[in-house]
Length: 174
Image 1 (spheres, rainbow, N blue to C red):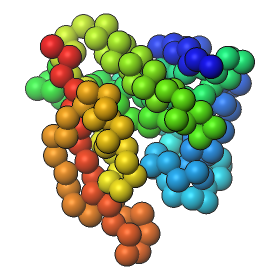
Image 2: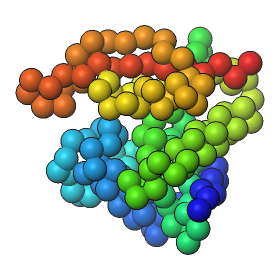
Image 3: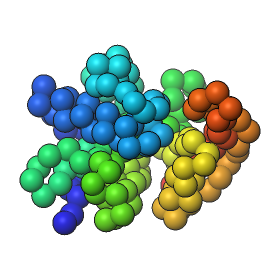
């Protein structure tokens, strides 16, 4: 099985619903994508709509990975910086691979597509992202070539008494 990635796909209602379902499934499987389980799709809708509005107005780009049946199996949002002193790098947000495909190389394929996309953007020299400590995501991103650039201890409160580090990672493109 392979993942086929596309930058800036047409986001019709079907694709939107598949991204929403992906986000809910990833969240409910314990994925660190802005929510903690249990979460309903209805709770995710405002975040998804805001991300898609940013795509529609050109502040973000969307990478979608599809499985062999053409269904959305992975996503990542790439955000431009508005600040004039930081326009030479992009942020990556909401990196998701459906739990049924984890461990099959889909995550690496998605991150390679994100890197390829960022390299195609004029003037972009680096990618930054953050991840929640204690999930192993930092090791995954390190295996994809990212370097830890900073860490804020206990910045993410998953639950009372369960605080996690907010880890910033960086991938130079030059």
